[in-house]
Amino acid sequence: MTLYLKDATFLDWQSLEIQRTHLAVEEGSQNGFSFLTALPSADTITPHDRVIDCAGKLVTKSFGCGHHHIYSTLARGMPAPRKIPANFTEILQYVWWHIDKRLDLEMIEASALASALYCAKNGVTFIIDHHASPFAIKDSLSTIARAFDRVGVAHMLCYEISDRDGEAPREEGLAETDAFLAAGHQGHVGLHASFTVGEELLNKAIALAQKHNTGLHMHVAEDIADQEDALAKYGKRVVERLQDAGALELKTSIFPHCIHLSDREKELVRRSGIWVAQNTESNQNNNVGLTGYASLTDNVMLGTDGMHCDMLRSAQAAFLVGQATEGIGFDGIYQRFRNVHRYTRECGAQGDADNNLVILDYDAPTDLTADNFLGHFVYGLDARHVETVICQGRVIVENQQVTTVDEGDVLAFAREMGKKLWSKM
Image (cartoon, rainbow, N blue to C red):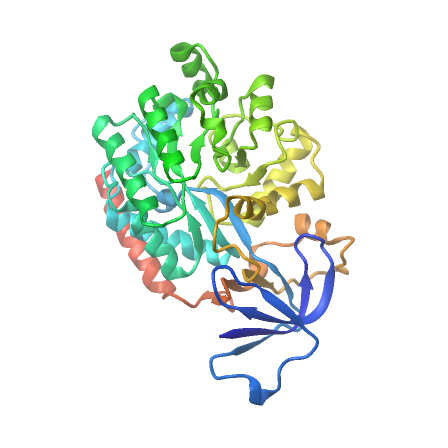
């Protein structure tokens, strides 16, 4: 099947050059598109082909999320915790760990479906997720993968292994990860954070990542408590501990947050080539602090940390905060917004090829050119402009409605599972 985009205003996501053209988009996880000076004649277009009129619309590469948590989907509007958290560790204890301990596979499926639906409608076609459900670990990753596949978004998944719930969940997390990666799925070996990961688990996780030629996906120095724990237990800071264990040799690793790093730790991260995921809104929500990433590494991509599924919103929030923390410019925040594509190329991930596109009905009040696009990106574009989304050459959103699943059914299922979860809390 070939998808033809007629009369598109095409924006090259790398050069920012704009041209009026037709596109022929091929289906498949590693395919792309070609430019056409004219559409094929009607008698050469097969019944399996399709033409979408893009006159007046902006077409460009769709978006990716560098760090997500689908398990937070059912938290929206949930009952207040039994104790108001006073710090970050209490936020984990009384909110997020309280939720994840009560998840079952049905709730996980509903969370994944709803989250994938929201991502798709926001133009996000590649999701790197970090999952936790310590008493529903077995088959959790395959459940999420099937839900994402139903909606039609590409993914890299992992299970957040830790020692916080004891030996049995830890070993089950390692087994689930091993089985998922051995089955040919792309993903990481997930760990929660240094303060919930003992030496034995850290060494096992690194060995498992080496076995499957992948990296770790692990929260790093999100709160100062992570550093205090590492210094008290191991006599070294978090990144120094990871360096000594050999974790920094896993080049496709992702370290979300990295807020409370020393200069030496920043140098270790920079030299390693490890990727960092910036989650500004979540950091503000949890009151863990802010940092400038310009002095850390160029390998910074944006995530949501499960706060929402809107990467344009994440970019705008990171830009506004970044002006004060590091003097970031339009070009710098756009690079971080698009760095997820650099990451997928470098680690050989499938599903983020050139045939992932978004058609934007952008009603700009001023001219849009290659020279001023970044100003439109920061101050103009938002999720309401996402009209049609193409993932791997397949239309998954059209006229702002998901085409692959029934939205009403997905949200009804999520609401049912939300009530089930809240009743257990």
